[in-house]
Length: 109
Image (cartoon, rainbow, N blue to C red; front, side, top):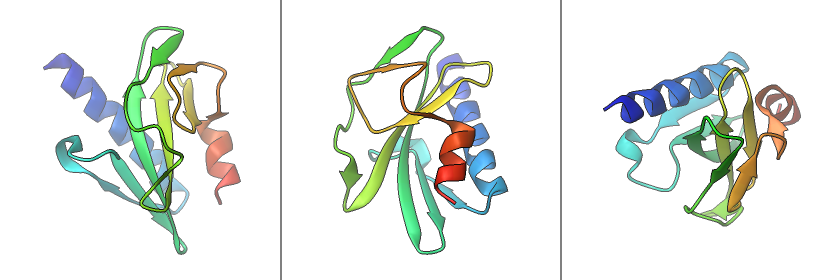
């Protein structure tokens, strides 16, 4: 139960950050598909798979393409303490891979 609660909390925090900069965010309930969050802004749509880890790296075994149904697909890893990284999906994600959350949001204005 704790893991599920933590996962929801991480998703919620990511959703709030996106909404603060003007994105409309839809949560895919119970993660029934590949994406946990669907983010829409000014005709753009991106799909996010949210993961969290207390370790230096996360091993990801989910969807591996950079696009899903033609939309950009990103892996978001929360390493805790404000260390959130967003990157194209890959098997091993580390704390220095991809972009930080704030950098990603600035890039995707």
